[in-house]
Image (tube, rainbow, N blue to C red; front, side):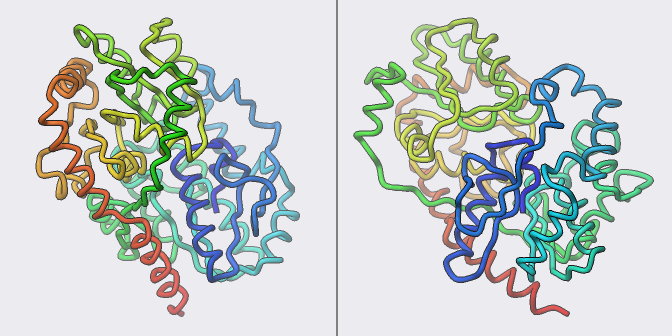
Length: 401
């Protein structure tokens, strides 16, 4: 279940929801409940695709008004908490889920909780598992923060403070999944119903013909050093503006900077790049093209302010790409495997990132060691192992009375 897909047609949560549904379809009667995304289309097997409501204006969401706390508070109280703008009536939604009679619902979004409460209070009995993609366990989620308002006001937890809100939220679910060690420790402070399952990925086969087609389409000459960012264009979390500033500080021939992905901040990034022909924006691409972009890249950069467990980092690692990631994204779980061969930089420091990129461009011996470490990381965080852990978790939750 991913009600967050109402607002985001791309992103890690939407990709993960589709991955889980496709996995469980192999052996179970599994359904996806949410909106159409890049990864879950109309007509997909056992997909309950809800129509997008016109009540949420995309241009309004991208305006400065949407950044104001009072606006966001009203939005979450009236839209999220009251289940407005679902695209269907509550009665119709209830009938769609009743037809399935789920035994367990896996929640991929903080915005699932109001819907889950509604379904439970209207006679449906099922177990619930929440995956903390949103990282509500971390310190960014204070009561009236931009990140915290969807939890404290939108979910209807009626909490007196942030800790009370988190405690009520995590204890609503039969089990919570932490994506990393730090999350697991924090959630344990609110409930004992928590297990850690790291993200995992598998690398598809290399497609050299596709790589050449992408080179031709975007003007990526052989011999050019390619710096890659892939992910949602969402400045408040991803902080990708720092890459543009840092890249433009590199002395001499710094190669090409390729931005792969879409999101509300994309136009801002294009304006910031100011027509620099060495900075290329592809927009949203297919999974196959994304895989080939990793193969084309010489270094992958992730400058996020926070991450649960970045799938794009693992995908880049699975292609043997050297990594440069912010301290906000450099989680303990990666440090255990990286043996100091991942360049990291202070999340807000443009100069620190510029220095890391310049050193990576010039130091071929380091790049070889870093590529080996990336491959080691990818072997440790394997998608098949991860999916098996989710299957075991579902069976464990269902076995409890």
